[in-house]
Amino acid sequence: MCLFIIRFHLFVDLNLQYNNYLIIKFSNYHIKKMTFNEKYKDNALLIKTFNFALNIIDYTNELQDQKKYVIANQLLKSGTSIGANSKESQNAESKADFIHKLKIAIKEADETEYWLFLCDAHSGYPKCSRLLNDLSEILKILNKIISTSKMK
Image (cartoon, rainbow, N blue to C red; front, side, top):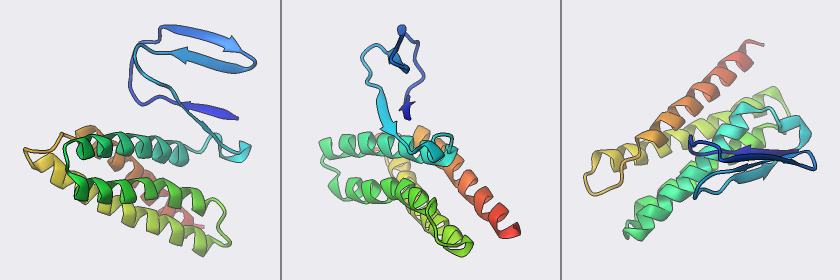
């Protein structure tokens, strides 16, 4: 099962159906495709964290172009780790292990939020309010999953 992750809200130029795949063409933008096992195809957390990681990669590339290597490297590690830990939680050995892995994802999200706050506050860095908004959504989802899991 392939899911297409669209990182920008743009007007669709063309929709085509080909061998059960929806092909969407956008002006000057690439479509990011990821493959999930069938059991993960509707997992909002995995989709959001994957999309967030793609946006973090783009943002850190921009920082590296501006020779801001230290924060770029920190952001790249913590920002992409959120999705990796969320994905790993899907194969937890127990409920406690599941919660533990998601708590690690929250720690990585908190660290990412710190670096993004620094970038957003400093005049010499590109603004990242969209990344902060996306991260806020991810944190809400993670916290809700953990609190719900603890009640069961």
